Length: 332
Image (cartoon, rainbow, N blue to C red; front, top):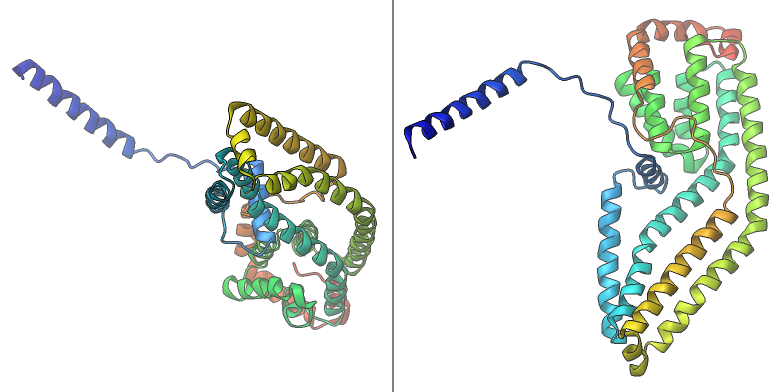
């Protein structure tokens, strides 16, 4: 290496070092990290299914593991790698489907219990409890399946002393549209006060009860249609599974024509199933607050509420001394 080349290398290294030092002197504002919609929906589904620590990446790894295991076993038993690949692709969808079914079953079960929960909350407020005390008491006297959610609220409120942060934590572990409505209603009541808390809770309970009744009726009418469509999609592949035990069937599907036939059948089955789901799908309940993490608006509201929490706590004690004020449910 010549002297000029060595000097050029030293100068480049020195310039890069000075540039890095200059970059370190400036603090970049960290922008709000937004998740994609399908990632938020997967997070809500996993939380609603009872696996809040499971992430979409973990679900992907589980699906890949199921795909590999089923594909290998199907290839060994049938002797056709093409058939094994198709069965592996179908099996890779099963973890998502099972978690989705579990989350929807829990959501339907909770939908039946939210009106009773709101009635208990209204009774607690009318009995003279402050709003945080009434919510915390539901961990012991609320509906059994919902008690763990209110235990999380009570623990967060005892640890932080912030009603807004406790409500946000309750919303995260609930991952339920009805819970979002309750959180928004109670947040507004806590922030601005008012004398219509009891009326609001009764109206919300009646609305949730009517909505659950309507959705149950529609689901019962459409369930047999959806099950029939699923059977129609699965029937050809069940027949293929029985036929694949014959050696000549495996030989036929290992050819190029057999592979094209399997690929076309797989795509048609997938498109037909997706069309059936879209046609028979009921309108999903909108999330008032999307996502399973603190939004920027709620983070600012939580910070403001935490700053004023001392004054709110004193006012809660004054409210709990009078039955009229307790019935009003004003906490701020």
